[in-house]
Image (cartoon, rainbow, N blue to C red; front, side, top):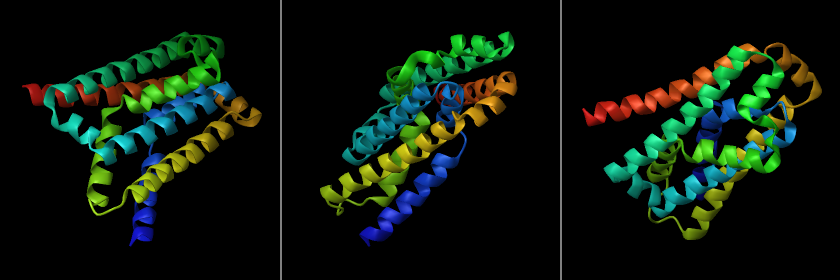
Length: 210
């Protein structure tokens, strides 16, 4: 039974990882500088580890069920993602790799990448709801603490492997030459993606408040 739990949660998580979203867009934006991209991958994986831990300990469920606290989390997350989107769109408007790097801060290095990856995933309320829904539905109260800890590590390692591989692949010289030729549309697409997620969060909040 425990084996099937690990396989099922792992497969569902891989599907979620492969779906385009703010995390993918961040890796794409930071890929012009490999240390920053690798840092972003590490930060995203750490955020997912925290989301999984919070969900299995009931903290995330407490946040989701507390209206004003959840509204605050969603508002901060929406504003942060909107800020990332604005930076990407501004870089697309200005054009050029140098403008892109300056607007997005992609040359911040490993530590800066970790911070941005951590913030992008941790402040995304959709990620919080995903892990609450996934783990609350799959992990029963009968599951031991050891098994819960191993599940958290499974999600962390899968995330680190996926985003680490993505960051490494997109920062190779060959990939850089390709991305350099499409830098402006790339910035535009990532900016629209960040902005769309931000607006969808704000729109959902508005519907609940009306």
